[in-house]
Amino acid sequence: MLNIKSFFQKFAKIQEESAASKEGITNAIKKVTGINLTPNNFTLEEGVLRLSVTPIIRNELYMRKDKIISELTSAGFKVKEIR
Image 1 (cartoon, rainbow, N blue to C red):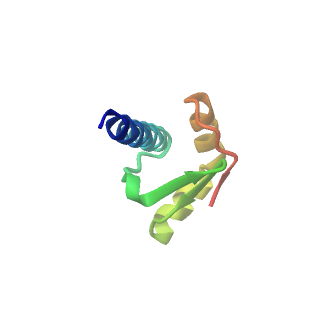
Image 2 (tube, helix red, strand yellow):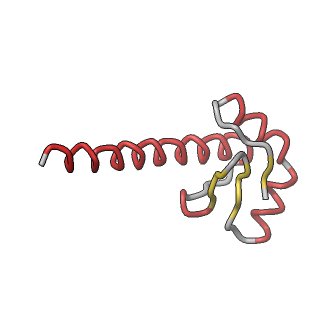
């Protein structure tokens, strides 16, 4: 019984870390652009931040891409590209 509990605790910890990471990313983007994103608007995989937003927001984020990447890097996230 304890083995199952520890197994699921690992997943709970991963989910908490993921939520904290997404919150940090949204805060960094808001700091640079003033745009509020939800955690459902993006994913971060292998250094690539993939956006699922409207074209207007996407263009705004692309115009400030270098500043966003710099802010995310200084916040401890490994982001190389925004798509």
